[in-house]
Length: 90
Image 1 (cartoon, helix red, strand yellow):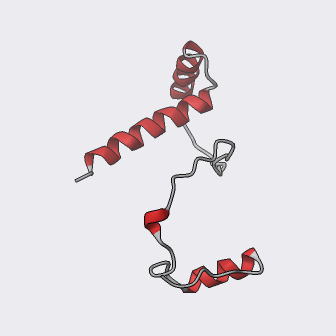
Image 2 (cartoon, rainbow, N blue to C red):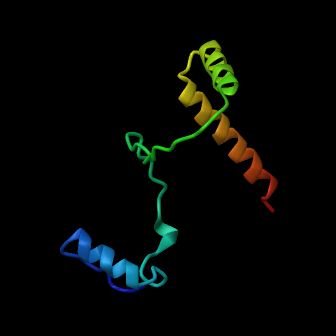
């Protein structure tokens, strides 16, 4: 195992890791799972065109489930992505 590297700045460390592999640098057997409960995922605003009837149906479903309709759309998309990804696991 190589000697632990020290960096003066985050930018210096970022530059180093862009050019180097962690193999031989990091002992992954000592890694611990980290939970960051207050970390908010980055989001990107998109424009999505939907038929008015579909949007109204989503709003009705969202109201029935007591969630904002945009949140419901994210839930539905997330569930479908998980289901699709599950089909392709070995």
